[in-house]
Image 1 (tube, protein in one colour):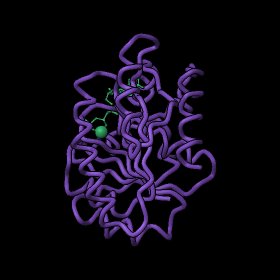
Image 2: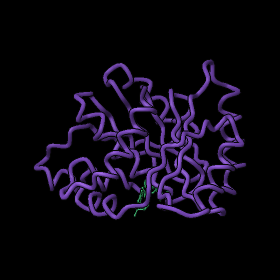
Image 3: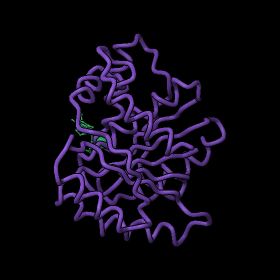
Length: 213
Ligand SMILES: Nc1ncnc2c1ncn2[C@@H]1O[C@H](COP(=O)(O)OP(=O)(O)OP(=O)(O)O)[C@@H](O)[C@H]1O
Ligand SMILES: [Mg+2]
């Protein structure tokens, strides 16, 4: 399965979700390719730190690709891996578009702040354009990342996301937790970092099981 993690807003947690998902799948014994399609190279940095922390034992393969190459290379690499995760930048780039043509699934993390939700119309038109030229529909899942533990922001964001059926909002929020940054700074997923943040692990387990079903 080819899964793109994207959107048209920086800092929503695309690289965090991509790297944790790549590790989550590899820990289940799958052969995983992580494609870094963002010139910021967050997934590549994560992987470099991971190599140091884990003595080169990455658990997945990483490649950097941009533009049209994302589509062409992923098409070629698809038969060699059980799962390919593509981390895109937070803009409407040729890389993200190329990724969406070759993907089975599209994960859209949103942080629960109203200004972020305003990028929604851009995501919707990108999605509509991509769906238009695909032979099979791109299965999309939107969800909250960096959610508040409580408060009205979550509810407002959820309402807006729910209104747009094509975004297929899934009510499995990932709450904002320090563990994500702490683990990432060592190139680790929250599944591996100790002390384990059980809540972060539980939330990702639920979300990842759902979106890879
Ligand atoms: N659930 C979370 N809880 C707390 N911090 C988080 C969470 N998800 C992501 N972050 C933090 O938010 C910051 C941005 O995350 P990340 O780099 O994954 O976003 P991004 O969407 O890939 O950004 P960019 O658009 O720049 O590529 C990082 O410091 C990361 O550790
Ligand atoms: Mg990123």
